[in-house]
Image (cartoon, rainbow, N blue to C red; front, side, top):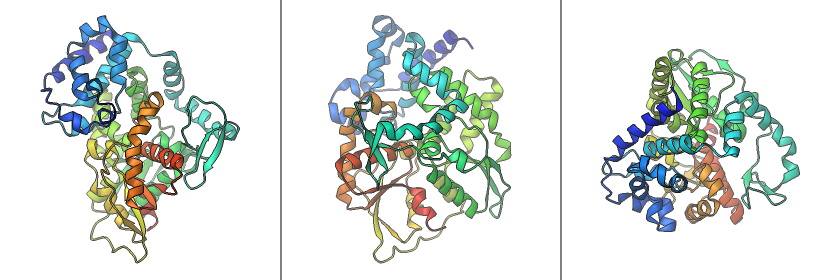
Length: 430
């Protein structure tokens, strides 16, 4: 399909979806960005009004339209609370694709996405070498959170970032294809970039849990990014390449489910792969839809299949207080909230203390944090306040990206609160 044809198709879909918005303004009360700026242009209703008649707006001032669309966390709070059921994220991603197709990608993004991210072998090689040089440009600041900051003036600003894993998951855990055990089930395990390169321990905890419950695992070699960074930037070319790469390595006939411990990957595969696979051949589209239907968060899979069930044990005397942050992509996109809590409750050494507004966005928003770091931090401070007010000694979540943002917030504030994945807590019981 040519680029022009694809853009025309997306524009037609966009116009069909926009008519469902009643401009009621319910999205104002749940939008983290609007809560900080109070600008109508920053809330979903304002952006949707702008997109109504996008073909004309493209001719007037396409850069202004693009700038307003990029000021969005893509957290899905508006869509999850829309009384009309407007699929806001679908609309925004299609609009970004249209604008990027019309304006072209900035050179830096074009280089990063099309020459690095779209080439998984090169991407893995570059990131595997990076830890050797990390200490030259970064200095450790918090051993509990394993965070560093830049030694010199940096494009990353003053942020405290998680250090790259010394050994990525794909080298710690080689490709495998094991048969189903006592569960009678086989799954494909999709690690995702952040677990592979920053949090390999989370991937190992997931694999340990699957093995413990007698689940066979299909883990192919050379897995690629799920594609959400490129898609969020409107780069459907890179997204389609990554999708085709992953589809070539995943056969839905060989497993019962595809599971991941990354909320963003789970949401992308479940929602975006079937939505944005229109440039693929019919067989590819059909495979993307089948994989999407089989995809589950690990906690969702373990509870849904009955592998974990029953009443959890009572927290032990002196149990460590733990709080939980609901990732937007997990709760708002996939309606997964109780399952991670039930897994953590299986560990009596920890005691869950709910924070206020546990499902309020942490403020990262992927590339939003890179382009609007001050706003990202302002939104994140609300999460920081709720974590510290809970009195917990650790905060768990189900999204590696949220772990990055929360680690940055806690590290800069000097708070001695550990950041964990819910699987870290559950795996201690195995």
